[in-house]
Image (cartoon, rainbow, N blue to C red; front, side, top):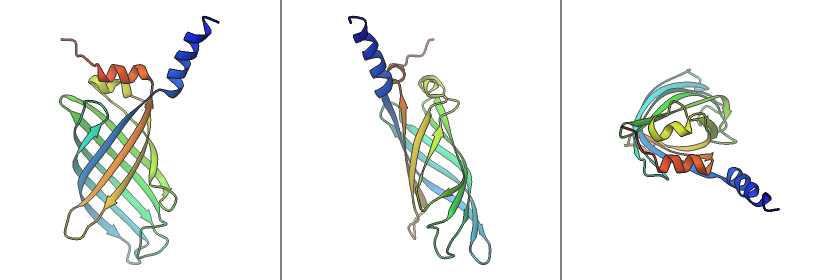
Length: 172
């Protein structure tokens, strides 16, 4: 019985674990082309923004990518199928990580969320390499202002990974 308590505590920590959170906001510059009937639209874009996390690490973000929409109605992007192919870079001081956003025929009438991996992390972010996150976003297209977005990602990780990120020290 004495041995079951530590095993339970270890398993409970792994099952419940911690959550690494990212919030990213940026202005967007895009170029668009569409068919004359407005049922098929493709745009490429780049963004420069900032990100915060639920750790001490915050910084800048930069994304590039292309989106394609197959529309149901010509006057709205709602209920359209969207193909996404983006790569976003996140930099905090000299440390960085990347998130590729990829989805094929993603139904925008059902969700604006996808699963994304964290890749190529350095420094404290190396503990996030390969972690899958739930990402959701909203786009803002206000007339007279640059297009912008707000993205939030939550990544379930172990308590020990979160501790390594929060207490990261670089060996000199």
